[in-house]
Image 1 (spheres, rainbow, N blue to C red):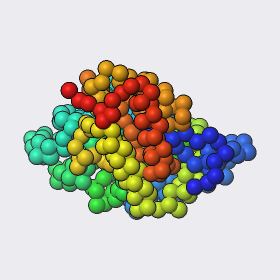
Image 2: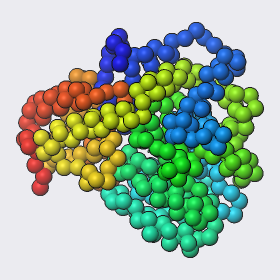
Image 3: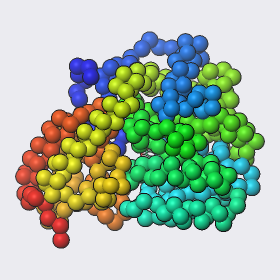
Amino acid sequence: MSENKVKRNVLLNPGPSTTTDSVKYAQIVPDICPREKEFAGIMAPMRDDLVKIVHGDTKEYTAVLFCGSGTICIDIALNSLLEEGKKALVVRNGSYSARACDVLEYYGMPHIILDQPYDALPDMDALEELLRKEKNIGYVYMTHHETGSGLLGPIRKAGELAHKYGAFLITDTTSSYAMIPINVYEDNVDFCMASAQKGIMGMTGLSYIIGRRDIIEKSKDFPKHSYYCNLYRQYAYFEETGEMNFTPPVQTIYAAKQALIEYFEEGEQAKWERHQRIMAAIRKGADEIGFKELLPRDIQSGLVAALIYPDDENWDFEKIHDYCYERGFTIYPGKMQGKGTFRLCALGAIDAPDIEAFWKVFKEALAEYNIKVPVKYA
Ligand SMILES: *Cc1c(COP(=O)(O)O)cnc(C)c1O
């Protein structure tokens, strides 16, 4: 990784992630109108690279770019891909799959929700039963990595079941793509999605849906729910002109170009090993302090640790956060209603020594605010 000219913050929040200086500086380019051929010449190979990350054949799979945060992909995939007369089926087991249900609700689209616990693997027999019973499911939707809890969803099985019953799988891989190796064929993924500020360690403002060309082509005639946020529209425009329908996030795309160079330089396997090294360092420190985790480790993604607040009258997340923040480490509150948790995430251009340095500061913070170590639970 390059030498740091910009102050380096270690972000342990679930994205945006710590970036390299080379990615930050890639945004500083001469002004350019994105309607110039030169700019389309950046996006075309980028679309192919994004498909290659999940091992798709670019004749069968394509990547469609959008200007927006990750949620734009949830919105677009769900609202664009439901055929007339069919229903969506969402496995709801965390805050991001709940967001997907909100989107369908918002557009008044027909859908069925399979509610599952946030802290256990979703029941695939229940999913199969629903698919068998409901004969007109268009797509099954499952979050790959529920970033709020850290749970890893069984997408391979969900995709297999979807296919068995004539549906396809849309999965939200925003917080796993380009981190956990994914193969669209082996993992039965028809559509996945991500955002540049997460796995590829780029900047915010660029998001992408990666999925099957044949289904996108077919969706030309599906009911429309949005003008700006429609998958076929953006796809068709790209195919025809090489450009985004509307103004792209120019500088973010330059950063993403550099981030992809660095992604392929590091390599899928080496990068995944680095994420695992980071998580091992997170767990080592958490164990030393005595933190309890929200989920058993064997069902976690290995990218997010959700730690339960200790029962100590002096515990105050805000104070600990501020102490760490002032020293260059960002920690993040949990997303679990009614349960006090905070999260440490293994994203970004960081490695195990950053985590060791973080725990040193974190322990100082505990001492500063008289929180007993090992921490106690009632
Ligand atoms: C980060 C994330 C998103 C996108 O969130 P935005 O705030 O819109 O960028 C979507 N799904 C998952 C699972 C995520 O972790």
